[in-house]
Image (cartoon, rainbow, N blue to C red; front, side, top):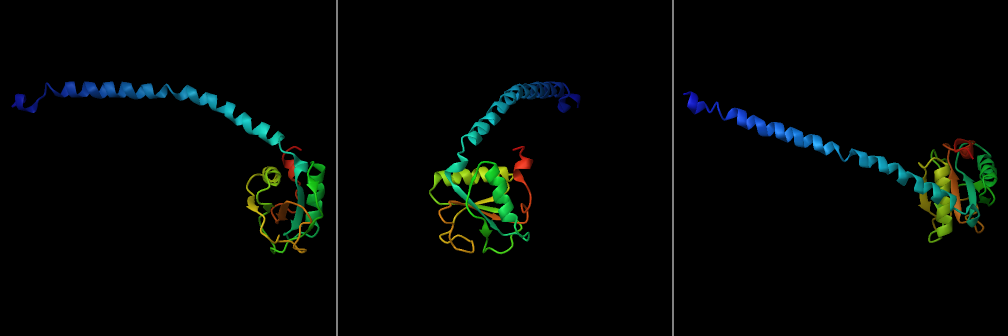
Length: 164
């Protein structure tokens, strides 16, 4: 009966399991390659410096519940180096969240719009301008970037948050 149990074969079966565990420990060796990743985080910093803030005219349209906030945001962005058009009111109604629009096919406008999104924390919707801009005059007078200023950024200074 003992021979039919295969008692002598069981320890041999356990030995390969030990070898398999030893193979698992070798998978930890690639971990040092993750230390090279921080070098890639430096590249976007140079991209930010390449944006020409004067390459596109920006208009801020108040879509918030705070009167005068578009004018104040225009002053803040002008002081940060952006070329600003006249502040106006949005026709989108009251927005809880700010939106940034840029002229379709205008690379400079898109770069400026993307930089504004970054200044505003990155969680802002970036959209192409519709044929008729959502502002009271239905015209941006040559501007190629529009900020529909919602309650989230009304009377807040985004340059203070970024240290600029």
